[in-house]
Length: 419
Image 1 (cartoon, rainbow, N blue to C red):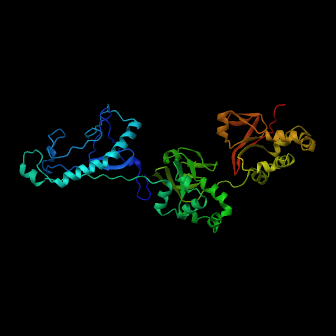
Image 2 (tube, rainbow, N blue to C red; image 1 turned 135 degrees about the vertical axis):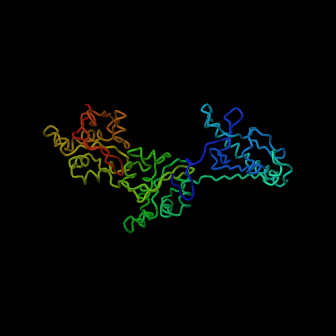
Image 3 (cartoon, rainbow, N blue to C red; image 1 turned 30 degrees about the horizontal axis):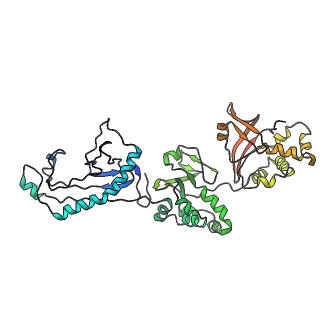
């Protein structure tokens, strides 16, 4: 795994932990390093008072040197762990409790070891060659080190290559959020990534009047939860804090077409993956997209006649099942013209609101739910039939068109509420 600012991956750490006497035996690994979940590293160096020449003869069950302090944690003396298949693993709760015990005991361990060291050697361990024993007597030394993980913000700042990101988060008032409990998965653009934006873009985004747009962009880089590289690349889309989804490609390890260049930088409240460009969410509203597409002219005219234009330009979010011009043309002759008459405004409004669902509902979510409550008050049925997604009897020809205030699903016919 890659690291940032000297931080290592938890995958590189052992998982041995001290347990209470009725739990699993604790132990040292072959390098005399003791590890415990929750502590980055607790190392115990215990050079024996036997020389290197006689060390192979020293057995774990041999008599201990009488002046050598025996260290206990929770009343349990450390022993070497085994690979016995019947060896029971600790529960997460036990590991958490034992981690706390180790933290509290570490100071006592250090004080005990140093006191013994200052007292000086009084005797040597049992061995066949006394001359060798005396020549190779070594002072026992204990060193305990503890390095806490930093949160996402402090990790990024310490790296030194995310200054623009830090400035943007500060201006958007998102520092406090990303120093919170989380967890979060952050796709972090480097300073070089921000520099690739068109000239003047960063300066413009940092202006107070563009704060909402800046927040939208930054939250588009954050996904709730802690997702490592395998989980990210195992997905096709991820829903961001912005509300919109990002597309993931496993083949080229990219997010919205932007390369993920470094992964799995672990933090206390989440994980960071580094990207080499800034990813941008959709900034056009539902009505802006419908108007610019050129295939929703009738829908736009109907929304205006029903006084729904401002509503669908609001924050939302909304999900719109949008009939094309061809879908409206398929209505019985004269129906559309009648609906557009001022005296039929309420009926037109009811039909149009039957095409709108509150919230941002993507096609897979709608299919899983099987139905969706519309703003008209009725419900539409959503199902997958012969590979096609259908809303009532209308076919979804283009799903999941992102908008700044929702999502659009293009359908091939107008759906009518009952009654």
